[in-house]
Length: 104
Image 1: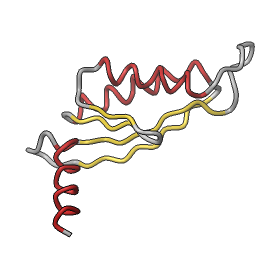
Image 2 (image 1 turned 90 degrees about the horizontal axis):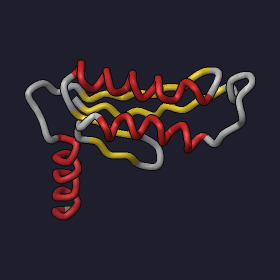
Image 3 (image 1 turned 90 degrees about the vertical axis):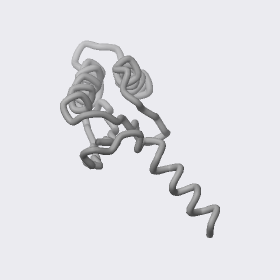
């Protein structure tokens, strides 16, 4: 499966803490993803990660937990492409798209 997700703190900094930029919180989440060893890619809006259901969801959960200290609440947006028996689709989908654009 491929999961595209975005996680960020919301509601302002926790009571008694110093304000911080959202990019610091997002960096904490992306570090969790990159340290997971699963294929991944980060763009300006989402982080994509590919693997088995339980592995991917464990990383999304850990990334969400990494953001929690930066806000009073956490916003998580998630989209999944669940296609059993397929791997390498993080790059494969883009390669097929680029070939189609070249043929157009």
